[in-house]
Image 1 (cartoon, helix red, strand yellow):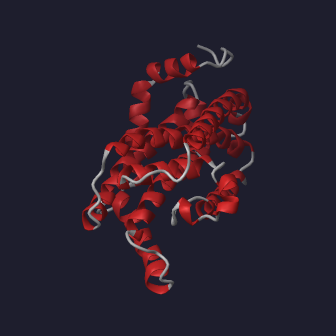
Image 2 (cartoon, one colour):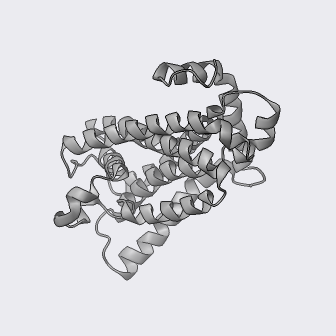
Image 3 (tube, one colour):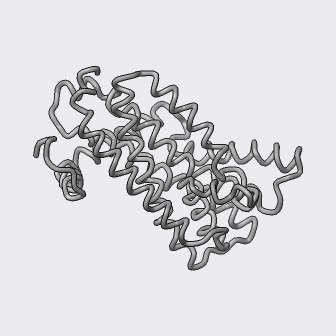
Length: 267
């Protein structure tokens, strides 16, 4: 298979299938490197979000008195999915540059490096969701049928993050400033998405525009699926977010396949 073959879902699936063993090895490598030399190892995937929850709980609940009932659960169900999507973008942005020596020595589809970053971050996200369980017990939250939304919401963030990662990987190889820009944008979107507050706190006068952000829809779906609460918006917003995520993924993969040959020359 060459990189000039037409862009189709089948092409991507064929790449994943043919390179599945390489992908698994890269995911294992990324996870080992992430926690190499640490005493707690994978427990950091639980402790990091818990520390953020503690900070926001202290600021908004203890000091500002604005959190409300179950605020820590609301926060952790916003921070975890956002970190999942943001980590895909930030780690995908350096997928080519951090593997430059390997890319120069071995010929393989370069999208494998971005996909492995996505897969390793998905594993971390799945592990970190264990941290939600104690909060559910404390606040007496029992999941219901809405839990079925969780895989769909996770897939939305995965598609959106991976599509952006494909673009960022090539752009960062061409212009190394891109990595710094991404960090700034992710921080801005953190507060522009319902990570530390629910969608219902957004004024109704601007809520329709606010919900055009697919990340807002995905986070709200995660929160609703775990807390077993109704969504604060209609299905049309979910459909729009799904269409946006699919388009970003397709466009990102398409641009990656067009730019990758030029990008690797700058590695």
